[in-house]
Amino acid sequence: MSSDSPTSGFVAFVGAGPGDPNLLTLRAAELLGKADAVVLDDETQSPLLRHCREGVEIAERDFVKRAARGQLVVRLCAGDPMLFSSITEEVAACAAAEVDFEIVPGVPPATAVLTYAGIPAASAVPEFRIVDAAQEQDWAVHAACRGTLVIYNGIGDAVPIGKALIAGGKPDTTPVAVSGGGTTTEQYTVVSTLGRLQADLKHAGFTEPALIVVGEAVGLRDKLSWFETKPLFGWRVLVPRTKEQSRSLSEQLVAYGAVPEEVPTISVEPPRTPQQMDRAIKGLVTGRYEWVAFTSANAVKAVREKFEEYGLDARAFAGLKVAAVGDATARALVEFGVKPDLLPSGEQSSEGLVAEWPPYDSMLDPINRVLLPRADISTDTLVAGLTELGWECDDVTAYRTVRAAPPPAPIREAIKGGGFDAVLFTSSSTVRNLVGIAGKPHNVTVIAVIGPQTAKTAEEFGLRVDVMADTPSASALAAAVAEFGAKQRQAALAAGDTPRRPSQNRRGARRRAK
Image (cartoon, rainbow, N blue to C red):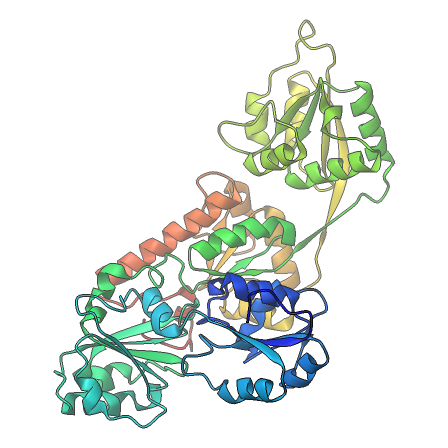
């Protein structure tokens, strides 16, 4: 059928790929976006629902009836629907009911998992053979494969399969890789040989789905491994921030191989009374201020919302000088259409801002007043510093920060029980609030802080600070944790040990070969 969707209902059998939700095809994402109902193979496919419209139904396997009623139904299939899949009968049912259908190929585990494990599917010998161990096999025939042999559904019989391949003529020194959790941050790979499979898999704990890869291409993994060697691969990292603030930080952590868990500890709310901000915005428009200093992206957001309330835009800043405490605040201003006139070149903090702020000069500055729209719990460092420089400050509460509700019980237990590998504290208040709503992180958890003040607060709560950012920004903090993880990994390898995540060092943690 054509790629244009018919006006009547139909069923799309869509390849969901090997596990990584980002390996979905464009056609698959398009159909999910149009779907009236989606049938999942299992819950691991639920991240793919982000492509769907709001209100899409999660259906049972009654898709033929739904399509007959005019619905567009997407039936998600693991991997590629036409490779070792059981949809033949389902497709036949559509045909028998005269329901239109489409089959969308997906990225198969046979190639994707190998690629993520750093094993080329076809290297020096151009032969690539895929075998389903769930069907009766003559392993002597497959022993003759000169290239790469990939075995599906064989993890329960991995040792007998290895022995059968040896009996069929394969040398017992033939490299073998077994990989589970393919293309996800749960992926782990054990490299062995046919002759050592029993010993090397004894404590590995593999379950299906997993792939067995046999052939000389496995030997290239040492040079080509890129996924499982990421600096924070598989690390579960707690990001105790507001949802808006944590998005870019989480994306950066994912790029390092981590699994970020966003736990809001601070809720940003409007001031209890709006009159102070109303007067400040009026004064800003009527020329009451020479400078406006922003100490957070939340302050920029609060002012921007007030502007929109009054029908104003960035042009109201004309003739004003604008300061930003750091890069994140500066980016929020630029998105608003305002380019900061002053940004600390050194330490991005109130102290850093004061260090570069020009003193008031009555000959050069027609007005000596500065507007500081800030949080209700801000420190007096900036006000004191500017006052000393001869400026008069209007310190205005632009927003309130209040403690968020406690996270769900499993998160609290993971925090206190060592289930997280690292926690990233981006302010003193995130330390206080996280401990307040969830308790202290376990001593195996890596504690990373954005700067000296946050480190001091963490230590006051009895936490050991392991990592501090070179510059006080969330991006620098994530990079510092990645560098820490890379050094830990390198140290383990240099000592001949298997790299382990911090959470695997707590008592009772499951030990698993990597």
